[in-house]
Image 1: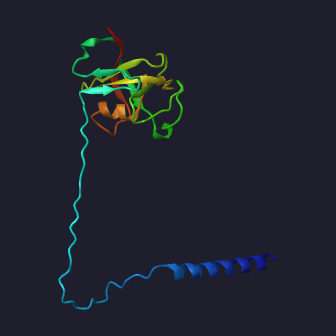
Image 2: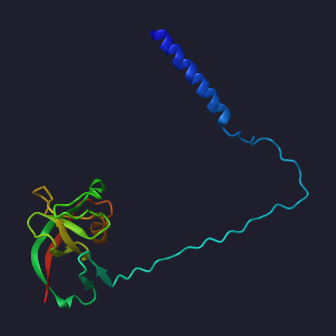
Image 3: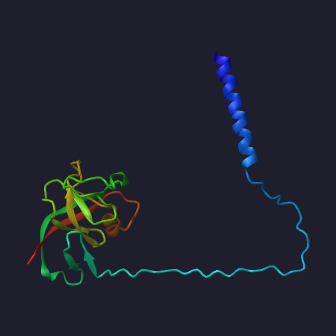
Length: 179
């Protein structure tokens, strides 16, 4: 019984294997000389169009609809939450999953996870080493490590770090309150 199944399997594999070999396109022999032609070879000219998109860096529009002008931050109060806090970023495997607030997580957005702040809270996260800052919305709970204070989306994290290979950065957290 086992031998007949084995022979049947080999017969089918041989049949499909030969059909696959016949179905392959034939390749040209690169070593074969080309016949001499009297015509000049034709050249094709293709125009490549590169489109650039202008990004307005003076304004950051957040998911909540709050528009903040980075040049005029005097319209908001910044309440200091914590200095020398450790920040990290989400792994890509969480992209598209639901957060604790019910929203879908987007690693290209400006969102964050905090242990105690209410959902929808806007927080300014400032890198203490280079002074770069970003404003994020709290949409999730975490990080579940005592050493870290906040988990940022990958885009928000990469906007404030100098070394793109780092996984953690020391930041200052400030809660944004309208005047």
